[in-house]
Amino acid sequence: MTDGTDFDGLNSDPVKMAWMQGAPVPQDRLINPDHADHMRFPKTRWAFSNMRKFVPTARIGRGEGPASHLPFALREDLDALPVTPLGGSSSMRLDESLTANFTDGFLVMHRGAVVFERYFGVSGPATTHIAFSITKSFYGTIAEMLVEEGKLDPAKTVAHYLPELAESGFGDATVRDVLDMRTALDWSEVYDDNNSDIIKFSAAVRMVPRHPDYSGANDMYSYLPSVKRDHSSAHGDMYNYRTVNTEVIGWLIGRIEGKSSDKVLSERIWQPLGMEMDADIICDPALVPFAGGGMNPCLRDMARFGEMMRCGGSFDGRRVVPEAVVDRIKAGSGHPGMHRDDYPSLPGFDYSSQWWHMNDDHGCYSARGIHGQAIWIDPVAEMVIARFASMPVAANPASDPLSLATYRAIAGHLMG
Image (tube, rainbow, N blue to C red):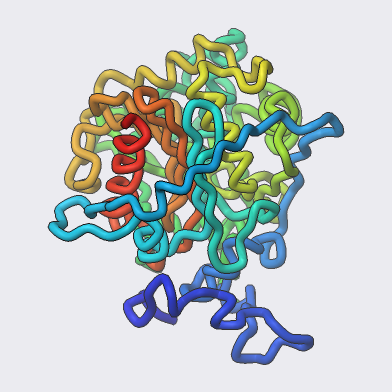
């Protein structure tokens, strides 16, 4: 439809564009999932906050108990904070940077309290928004919990737990290879190439509609065995970001726990943490949750998760994740070996346990999703940022120069 060059953060506002408004909705304002409109900018600015209307989802239940307390101590001095994009020379106000970067929701916690919260377009405190690959970090955390409990051995092969994948590219990879995205797979993840494997995978799980002559796999578990090995390299040698690794983690979690992973998310994270709202997670035609990028939480619950991690696995007096698990996640892999040219805005970064590690002087680590989703944890600044966005370009190097500069400017300001 467009690559976004005709729009900016103001004129693409979904309220101004009147997407899905009216009864009936006029044809030129309709978002039609049969045409993959929910994944086409600028319609994504409405669709990302309404994904349940376009694809099947499962509910991640918060349970019946009270929500955990989320303190507020809102500040009035952040909107005008100057932000200079990485590599840039001129600054803009923080509120201007949020609009320029197609932000849908932005929340800052400092020392345990919400100090800044803004919403744009059709998003709000009670809105669930697709988090894309932030989902990976939730699954990676649960997998590390299973490791801590002795239920999952990171040194064993994937085939040991999932014999269905013995002949696939995953078969001789270790669980640790999968967790740290160090599998040697013949699989491409290029979001703007219709021939890329990630696009074919999206059709298999019905994240996007299938072409009439589609003849591929019909669901997640029939797709994963088809992933091939790249015999030019060895597992563990090199970081290669591949969403299908997380689908294997989801399968491992379901196999070990004996239940669908949406229920595991509810029992392991949502209920113990006292989330404010139920979340949704996109499912394939066999109702298998999309572990690599299907979760739709509200922004405040993303912040709760980030603050719990910052505080060593506890929140509001509740122990959610063992402290040893958080320590292991924060430590990173210790052997980057990255394709650093793919991420020019993240020099020296590391990736492990489905989390990004900045290896900077603040020890920042992050859950990241395409189109600008983020949970940013800064231990030194005692700060957590949760962000929803609908950037026109999927890959985060497009939004990083402004978003990373914004996070660092806020951290510096809060530290005084």
